Amino acid sequence: MVIFMQEELNTLKEEALNLLESVDSLEKLDEIRIKFLGKKGKITSVLKSLGSVAPEERKTIGMAANEIRGKVEAIIEKKKEELKLKEIEQKMFNEKIDISITQNDARTYGHKHPLSIVIDDMKEIFLGMGYSIAEGPEIETTFFNFDALNAPIDHPSRDLQDTMYITEDIVLRTQTSSVQVRAMLDKKPPIKVISPGRVYRSDSVDATHSPMFHQVEGLVIDKHISMADLKGTLDIFAKKYFGPKTQIRFRPHHFPFTEPSCEVDVSCFVCGGKGCKTCKGEGWIEILGAGMVHPNVLKAGGIDPKEYQGFAFGMGVERIAMTKFGVSDLRYLYENDVRFLNQF
Ligand code: PHE
Image (cartoon, rainbow, N blue to C red; front, side, top):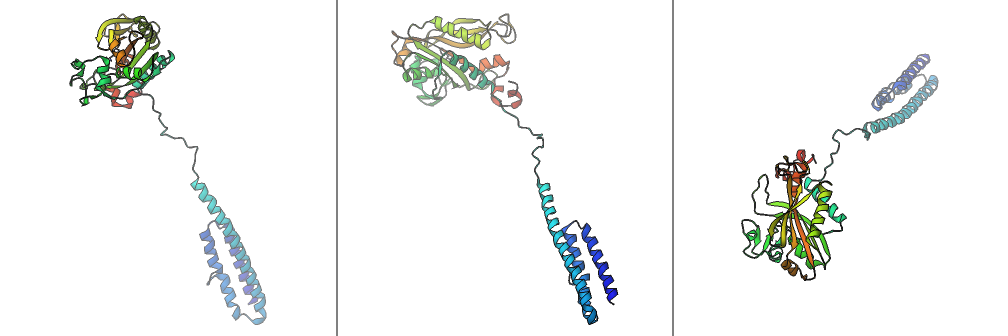
């Protein structure tokens, strides 16, 4: 009996140790525990059957069985710790975020709108010539938009068809010239400012018209300012902006707020004046209106025309952007289609 039980115990021990050797999960480990040490486990059964063993042999068998139980228990505990640790490591490995992964949805960066490119380039040229930036509101009084600019109440530009009125004496400014008198009231001469911004006219949208567009105004007031200063300034601007070979041309014109007034063309920067698609065969491209500030405007700005003179000019930004970038339809500039905008 003893020999038989001893052998059985040895086989049990070997079986348990073998199984424990190759165990690779906590569930399997628990299965082994139940198989040998559970209520109906193999080792437990041996211990339970000790009662039927002859008393003199009980001690030997009991000790052997207890020793095996202790050993198996110890190994199970040790394996349990090992497997738990392994499980955590595995979990951490699976949850690891691979920060080295290459992104296929790589970020795309925006860039300046063509109108902003033109305005910023213009600003840079004039700031380089010592000008500063002046600002005025887009919602403007008829005083700054018309009266102070020597445009009397019956002037055609004051017609409802041309101007968007908010009330009888508040409009959406039709020109950045409205900043002229504001600048004069704001500081004493010498004044040397440019004022870029939006202007509004009661036009319907088509390839060359929009109820909102942009202008860059220029104003210089000082002693002994003449048309020669205007010409020199615009010549430098044209050469810097359109290229060193650019020529300028003054044509007589009329604005209520300048006297004399002119429109200014630049020689075509594509064909150099021979005539091409860009200049529509003219050789010249109209870029702005200008003139010597009218004495009435100086007076409205609190400046004595006998002491000071000045010149002013106003450029249409869209027109310049369209010729410079070869844009055939004004509407492209406002549609914000990235396929269009990405070209500049
Ligand atoms: N304000 C004029 C326009 O809208 C342009 C201009 C500005 C002309 C300054 C002369 C002097 O067309």
